Image 1 (tube, one colour):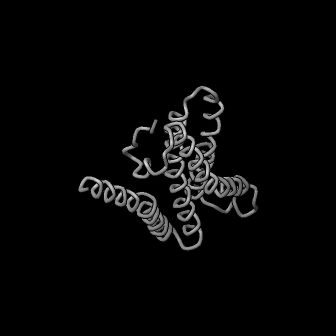
Image 2 (cartoon, helix red, strand yellow; image 1 turned 90 degrees about the vertical axis):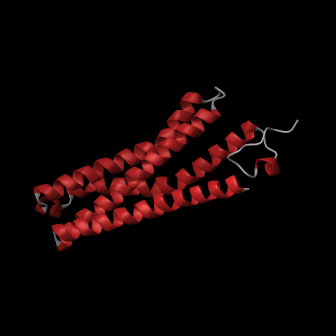
Amino acid sequence: MSPAPDLDDPYADLRRETPTERMDRNWVELLQELRVVQTGVQLLAGFLLTLPFQSRFEELDGYQQGVYTAVMLLAVTAVVMFIAPVGYHRALFRMRSKERLVQAGTRFTKAGLATVGLVVSGGVLLVVDVVAGRVAGWCAGGAVALLIALCWYALPLRAVRRVRAERARG
């Protein structure tokens, strides 16, 4: 018996995989994506957690310490988001809920990426603020935020729309 075609996967009939096999593949692909970002985010968060113990940290003004605190808390939040699918997997292990697991893992990953975008742009804002001043910090942080929004969201969304339009035509 041939599995039902997956409308979201144009290769479904070429792969000849069951829905369970497809969910297993999707889970493995999601874990691979998480491996790419997880280590870097954990290192960044660890580094941020050590900064207050550096001698120059006390030279930061109140605004800079506030930005630092927000960036550090966002970095820790990103670590939590990227590790959350593991806890979710443990909770759903052997419950035949792979589709729910993949959906939740995807949501955690998207939230984690958005959070990392804030961490990176906030970190740039802080560093440039210390080095070149408040206005330069806001300009640099904003430019990085725009670049992240373009590369991580706008261009992929544009690609999704183009693929859907091409499929609709034919």
